[in-house]
Amino acid sequence: MIGFRLPRHMIEKKLLKDYFKIFDFIEIKIGNSISDKELDSLINLLFECISQEKVSIHLPKNSLYDLKEYETCIKIIKKIVKYKIKRINLVVHFEFYNFIIINRILYLVSILKDQENLLIENVCKFYENEKYISEMENVLKIVNSSKLGVCMDFGHYLFGCFKEGIEQEKAIDRLLKHTLLVKKINELHMHDFNQQRDHLTIGTGNMMMRLIFEKMPINVSVPIVIESTVKDSNKDGLNQVIIIQKARRNLYANL
Image (cartoon, rainbow, N blue to C red; front, top):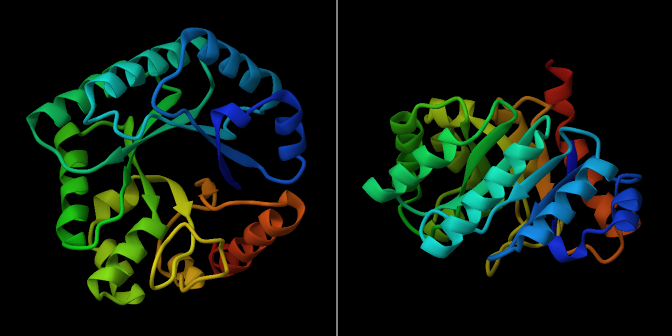
């Protein structure tokens, strides 16, 4: 399943119906705050327009580190649990961990039901990427829950490694050493990068897409979210999906 991330203010019935004529997955970016009325309206719309297991929610990105965003995050999760969506990934950024962060993750995981997963997403680091990935894996070990997984942002990771002077193949080989983290990858984020910046349109930068799928043991059922600007869904949006599909051919062939 491949699709894009869209901010919640763009989500409405016609857009969703047109969107799923082209793409098969969507991640909705909640933002820093959302009212109960807005959240109810959004969830009702998801039930009406989206088949189950085709959506993830990007929670307020600093939910683990900002108390106000953490409280909003709890409200969102409790509301989603109440609605009993069949399966949904709830994504939140991971920066670092300490006693407070671990306790917050433990609580968030404790209020999830069987149909929800909390995924910690790697942010872009320009130094000590090996140490950072190890810290993510340590959190998975400490929390030790089937409800906690990883959203692996390869745009963030490979761009950060590039800035650190690490070649892409070596960066992926280092990632593969973290077997628990790799096993826990339940969603992928993709965006291209060049020497100056990331979040570029897929196919316009330096990312070695085929290398990722040749080396990473990721099931084809894991959703891929493209995080780049789309001006025309039928052109640049669809073109990015096609590039990823071509890069995955070797993976399909080895199933």
